[in-house]
Amino acid sequence: MINRFYYFLAILSLSLVHSCNQKSSEEESSQPIKIQSVAPVENLSIKSARIVRFSENTFAPVGSIYKVLAIQKRIILVDKTIGNTVIIFDDSGKYLNHIYRIGEGPGEYKNLENIYFDEKENVLILIPMDYRKKYFFDLDGNFIKEEKYNENIRYTDLMPSGSSEIVINNASLNAEDGFKVYENQELVVSAIPFVDYLDMTPLDGRNVISKINRDNFNFTVGNRDTIFRYNAKSHKISADYIFDFEAPISKMDYANHPSPLEYFVESQMFIGIFDIFQNENFLSFTTFKYPRIKGRLLAKSSNKIYDTEELIQNKIGNIGFDGILGLSESGEFIAVLKADPDGNWDFSNNKSLEAALGEMEGIGPEEFLLLFFKVE
Image (cartoon, rainbow, N blue to C red; front, top):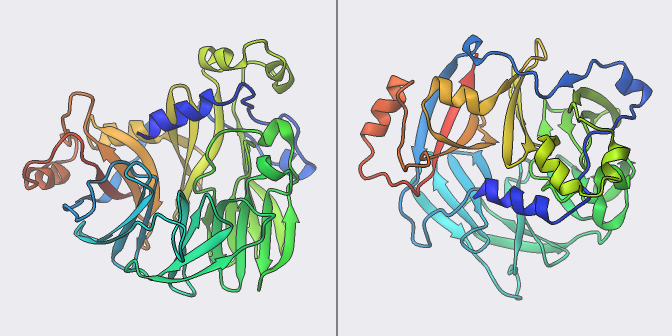
């Protein structure tokens, strides 16, 4: 499960870092947003809520959900639990196909890193962990071609944009710049140099690029406290949101602490910004606080932040929540739901969803549901 996944990642390193105390002059002009100071969710309402249940498929039940793409009346899941698989459903949850190509031949891989969607070419781009290649598939899961890519890149996130390719580079592996842009395969922007105390982090950099509009994108790099903006026309980078993680000790004291992992657990520090999704009014992101992820929803008009899990439980019911892991083409956030620890599905705070659940026969405690919703 996702919470256990992040817990294991945290164990891998005794050098977990938190937000940087050093700001550029551009960053200093922004007012930091306190990560722990959440506003009451009673002031929000959930609109256009619907749930999607997955039908049985010919491969295997969904074992985990790492990423969700909702495009062209399809729901595409990355499931790393059942063998590095991409499963394709229609927008009602009916199984269509899957991508599972384990091997060393054309279009085959040993371990799946991630999958992305190229709007212009209308193709899926699959990145494996074990080869310096990109694999291209159509939206029905049919293999098209493979290409080698620049060996100086370690993809953490990728967003194709016309002739451009916006890349977050996992700098902890090669000590290069963390943000790069390629146009027609030529490097045109390379920024945010690797810094060991900020970028040496075991946290997964899933979904760290988010499209604002045609020319503007938000992104974050490493374990920094900033959500940056990139303008594709001017190639300029600026800071949109600075977060105060309210760490109890300085980064230097933490780096020199004799038992940093134990201190991280005991002090309940927050670290990391990932899983960034946004629509016109809200920006959703995830941070990490032992022993699990913490969702945050930021109102763009006021810069107030809300606890996403609290919102779900207040407006939907006492239900398991694995985070917001996608955004629909119409701007709906996509939350991954599961049963509560006792195996129950509770939608008692939303009558329409409770009625929809009542029509689902034999829903089991091991299943996942997707909640599509907007917030006002």
